[in-house]
Image (cartoon, rainbow over all chains, first blue to last red; front, top):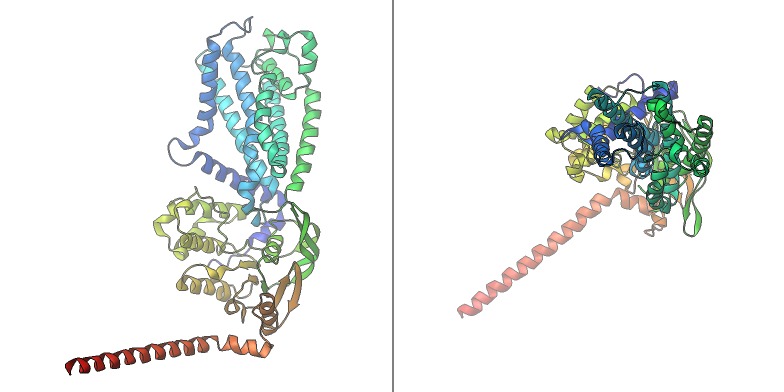
Amino acid sequence: MLSSGTTGPGAQARKSPLAVNRRVIGALFLREMLTRYGRNNIGFLWLFMEPLLFTVVVISVKAARIGVYGSAISSVAFAVTGWPALMLWRNMPNRCSGAVKSNRSLLHHQQVTIPDLFIARIVVEFMAASTSFVFLTAGFCAVGKLQPPEDILKVVIAWILLAWFGAGLALTVAALTDRFVIVGNLWRPMSYVLMPVSGIAFLVENLPPAYQKIILWVPMLNCVELLRDGWFGSLFHAYYDIGYVVVFNLCLSFVGLSLLRQIGLTPSDE
Amino acid sequence: MIRLTNVSKDYLTRAGPRRVIHNVNLTIEPGERVGILGRNGAGKSTLIRLISGAELPTTGKIVRNMSVSWPLAFGGAFHSSLTGADNVRFICRIYGVDFRPRFEFVRDFSELGLYLNEPVGTYSSGMKARLAFAISMTIDFDCYLIDEVMAVGDARFRERCKVELFEKRRDKAKLIVSHSHQSLKGNCDRFLLIEDGRVEEHDDFNEVYFRYKQLIGEGFDTVQQMAAVIENAPVAALREEQKRLKRLLKAAEEAKKESQQEAIRGAD
């Protein structure tokens, strides 16, 4: 009854590789969501509850130290543009590091390729961080703790650049981890080192000029500055270089994708 | 058609790269049934993985003009925290096919009933095997990779697998990895004997099985002798059993005699 299907899946695969890619990534995305957030409890709500709770805790800690950033910038506006941004680029590498190992057996399906496994996880992470960012800011705006962004375009561009950076970093870290386990072990402490310099807790404007030049080599910081420029740019002077971030992201993506090609060539442990 | 041209595969080990597949040239035509034999570690599964596309060759080229299944009854792709139904859904999504009719098939074939809504992690290995095989049968392929599938499940399940694979899908190409002559003989058009990553092609079953038995150190003196043993294997087993029963009977009779004599002596 079933064996009398008219077109085999192979036929479809030959028809349009892009459509197959989309379908596979969609399936992996749903599988990822189901395994991570499950069907029980509040299920998919965890997608934004988890980062949201985290941000609320941070904001309340910061609220105890009102005025540290001086001027008219509220601590809510400051925190809400800092922490979700951090989560956006930091969680992608964490999530991708185990992607091949735990999903290697899926590669027996001809449609599933190694990049699909990564893309699905990156998409999940991007959606999680974006959803939490949108809900968080909308929530604070609704209760009057936060002004809407002054230039939403800058906010979107900053968010996308940051996600791109996160994706490139995720591919690089994950591919290196697959080859050298030590990279995975080093990545966690590395991410804690990068955390303070990525601009969650300061504005470039408040640093001595000598340090400003150096610290702006950090691509995430440029994005966060752009994000804040879009949100409350009239209240401070933002420092960033979009061109630099784009070039950095291009190089990082190139490195990540080249490393990715090597993964399929190592012995399978399945 | 599947064509392997000068395919080699290296694995990195501590002692440097080790070649596990040596320069294999192979063509599988639509509808062909190919049996694969070889010792443990000879490279059978690696070859299957290369053909399924789970791994890329180090050198050489693999062209697939047929759709190729994943290795059958292969449960590794299950996610243990997903339910059986979720796993079916996932496969249907990947292959872009309708879920409903396939799910009904899986439910009927696997006979898992309500367990389909429980996480696969709670299944027994037999239940996993039934689910895996049922899912494998929901997608139509031109070529099926069968890696020791008949080793799992009870006799009834094996029988039903046989019907699905060798009767309903008679016209599909098949690559069958097995150590048992029962599942290879008569089911294959030709054979590949793999030894240390090199592939030898054979057309005759007796010939390839003779070589295989030699390789695993259970060699026969001649092909004819081996063929006779295989053919007569069930008969020989019956004879052995008969002998054993006769011995038992004899022993029992002697014991009886002895106890009777004891009784007589006691009466005296």
